[in-house]
Length: 67
Image (cartoon, rainbow, N blue to C red; front, side, top):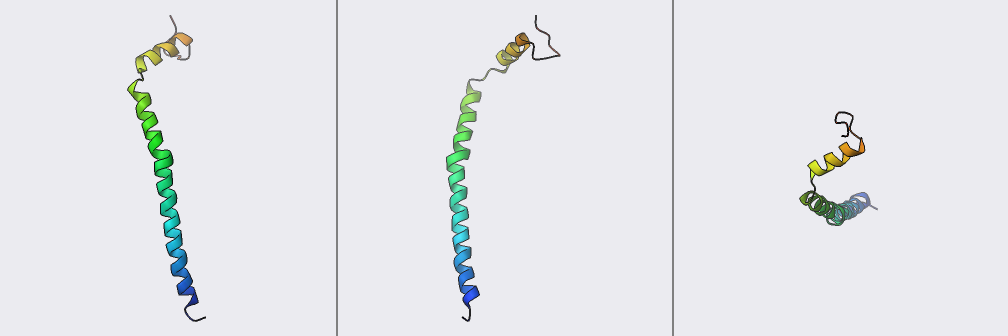
């Protein structure tokens, strides 16, 4: 029984480290990178002036009334 806590602590610390690194890398490559690519693709073809004109025509903006 002597040294049981220290032995188990090493095992659990190593396991916790590996699980946290694995979940962090899964999030990075499974969520963050695809999200970055999706935003980059959206803003490649996004035209803010066209979007502004559409909102203006719909009457969404109070400061720019529709014509």
